[in-house]
Image (cartoon, rainbow, N blue to C red; front, side, top):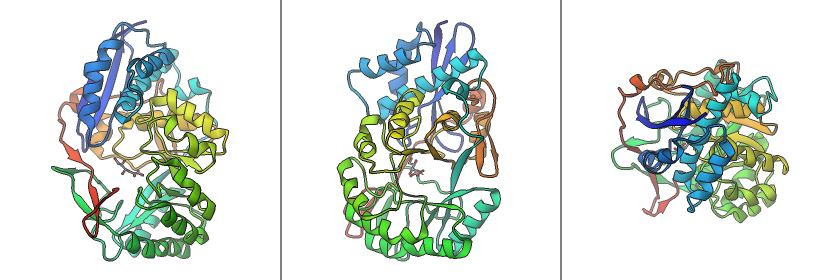
Length: 402
Ligand SMILES: O=C(O)C(=O)C[C@H](O)[C@H](O)CO
């Protein structure tokens, strides 16, 4: 069997997605997600100009060899652009292998370890009462795990909170939007949100929160300690984690579980965090961390250290990533939770999918492969539309992490 075509499809059915489609001489095809929010065309070019020509003629069954060839063969290792491109190839190859076997992908990984994949979604509001209403709405939909974010008095915009009350969409057309940030206002206010959720809805549901890389280690330690009475499932990305050692300080002060890693792209980004058990959940996901082949390696390593998976699953990763991630989640022994933000309707039409949602749990479906395809004709009706993530500045104008 040989790969005869490798095409890159860029489409914007509500948001930009980059998809790699590989076709074999037997007429079997597989797709992989290569979307890197705000830098989509860099990955599209990496694939089109440097990877696709190397794939034609290769045996699609040699997934590991192709992975090593693209990783070691590039000489320039790691980084989100390279690793997203490799991930797309890897996802498409696993899709092909499973289709050829006539099996849903999770069967090739080792079979189901559970009946369904617990997913969490986002309850966000401009203030605490609005967030509480949204929380109730997600509970009614069946969600067992809900992330909460809300506006902070005195701050015009806060990460995770939409301006119009619709679902949150951080990327904006044109130049990146500039937002303000005050750690003091946030830290003084946000514990009240968790207190209100627990007071109104009790402790049955899993409660999550994303700090989105905004604090220093000592500030994160203070937050983790302050919210211990509300038993969070996790406090996500409290500190930007380039410096993994920084998490030692947070860990010394709080038992609030920590999730990190949505911006990670290789096992080397989380090696120390996992080895020293400085985190509880690893957030790396298929598209940005080298696909199934590499994420499986990260998850196995994490399992040795009592760290569970909590894959990033925002709407800026395509349904192809979501479909493949659900297969991964159904199999991975040390599964924690999967993020599922949902998609705009046109995106769900461009990417026909086999997954289902029932009472807080998703299932990838039994279709051979990862169960997600692309309708290329429909995709062509939604051309690329540049959009960028915001940047954040402190009250005195200093640029800080968004
Ligand atoms: O899903 C999350 O936890 C996020 O933090 C979403 C990110 O801001 C988003 O994926 C950036 O593109």
